[in-house]
Length: 151
Image (cartoon, rainbow, N blue to C red):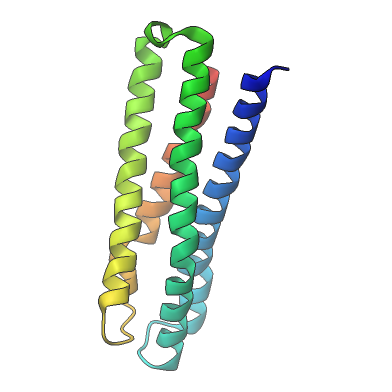
């Protein structure tokens, strides 16, 4: 296996691990931590707010790794097939995946910014990113990634 093969394997591994860290943490906070502590103001809300804000750097690092590794995988693919031979289907699926991913990234970071800027411990600020939309969006991006791998 040549250097390109190892770069591709490393990029895929980093891509998947970063997505799992980001998505898994988001699912845990949205579907386990928040419901367990309730939606009220006070100490429980402060704990959820603290957990979400401590999770923010992980999301930022994971986002950066996902973007870099994703474009690295694209570069490796282009090096194998040539930029003119990606195909229309691949280009369309890649474009849709990037659009959905960028919307999710924007929503996540906007939600974190809104929560960080809030003065109280009202958990409605943490709801800026609807968990259902985030989960469905993440699944869509993953399925599009699998489709890209098969094209």
